[in-house]
Length: 398
Ligand SMILES: *Cc1c(COP(=O)(O)O)cnc(C)c1O
Image: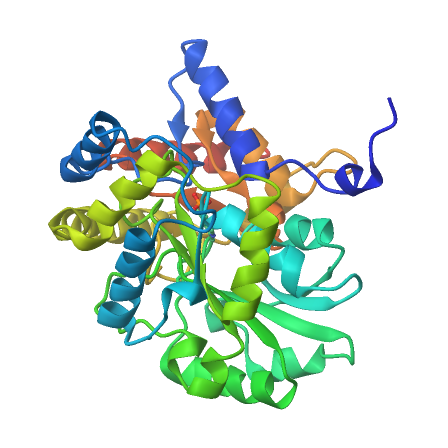
């Protein structure tokens, strides 16, 4: 059967594919250290799970309003106001089946075919394919490692055309862990306002920050920026709730209503039980979040130190999220990529086979010099895995 062009033009999610491969090896009895995972290794806190059990027992098991129950929207609005000082009404909030789904809905309703959307690289793997599904054109702007892979106003200006409609920012970043300061955002804001760009601010890691630096997004800088920004967030990363599939977006009411209309014709409401759990997550005690954060912070310091101990590697220190994105290009001379394979893909394959360590090649994020390691894995696995990488790199090309 001939499949539609729209699906033929996009690849499957590379990060999910790699995770599958690592799990297959594990099932065969191979002792794989999996640095590929993009989800917290903690269980969902117990008071959240209990809220879900209560919802089932109370029979909260029917369709809900398409864009989420009011109670959850109010809890989301409360957190936005409490944590970021951002005021949103329930009409400016959409709850979807994960942050990814909220993004997809938004792209489908705010971009017209042929609209150019700025995506700074390294980028989260799903942005370009999702934009393509919406018939928009991802305009990838490479950023520099010296600048912790953050986009500058000058780099942005250079790539604007009359067709540029939007920009996606992700801070703290997956895959680099870099976080934009208020000052860096203010510089970008000038360009955004001057050129009337719509902003997608993917804040999914806003609670996972290590050095006490304050969190900022463009919507927080000025009312005229908030009016053109969609803030994307969800429960997956903050509350270790990846399987529950609750994410949300906040922004101008007219566009949010349109995105909910799309949702009404595709998935309908997100899971009713997970929504009740979401209320408990957002309004309940936040100490489980603090505990996860302090463990991530310990691992961040540890993996950073261990990686820098490997000759030839360089990396910036992640300020947030649970990824580190070292540059392996000192080893590329000893690599022999197959036709069509990039250096980071070759190296990821070599390290999986030689050292049984799974990592995501930087090529998947638009930056081939690097590989992504997730430190959402135990202290012991981090020590073992980085040790194996060091040994295998020493043997490379022998
Ligand atoms: C994990 C992630 C998301 C969304 O995850 P969901 O589980 O769909 O909520 C969005 N953006 C980035 C950068 C992510 O890493």
